[in-house]
Image 1 (spheres, rainbow, N blue to C red):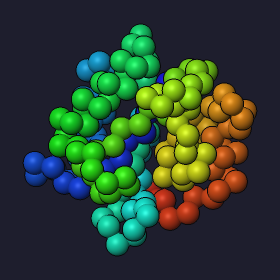
Image 2 (cartoon, helix red, strand yellow):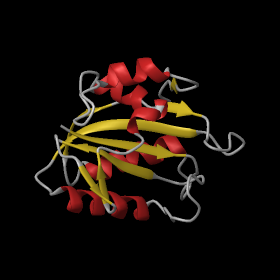
Image 3 (tube, helix red, strand yellow):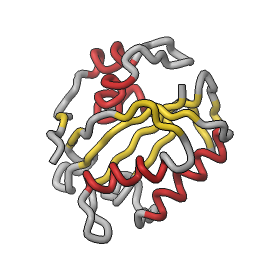
Length: 162
C-alpha cells in the first residue's frame, strides 16, 4: 500500500486550504490512481498554534512509479501550488508527504520510509484511520488504529465539506 498525506495552511491564488488539498489530490490523480481518499481534517498549527490551522487529508494511491520518482512528483505538485521550503514547520500552501511505499523501509536521507514522524502525528493518523485503519507499519508492526489510540486524536477534527 502506498500512503500519501496532504496538508495546507495558507491560501494560494484565491484558493483556501480546503480547495488546495482537494486540487492537489486531483493533480496527483493525473499520475496515479487514488482508490481511497479521506475526508478533510483540521488541526492546529505546530509548533506555533498562533499560525493558521492546517487542513489535512490522506490517500491510498496505486502507481508503478518508483518511490524516488513519486517523491519528485509530489514535490513538483507542491511547487505548482506555490510551496516554498523556507523555515521547517512554517505555514505553507501545500505539503505532500510520502508516508509509506508498500513494505519498503529506507533510512536514505533523501527518502526515509515510512515517514519518520508518522506515528507521532494525529493530524496524519486520523485521516489514515478513515481509509487504512489496519495498515501496519513495516518496522514496528503497529496498525494505524493502534498508533492513533496510543497518542489520541488531540485537537484534530473532521471538517464538514462545503
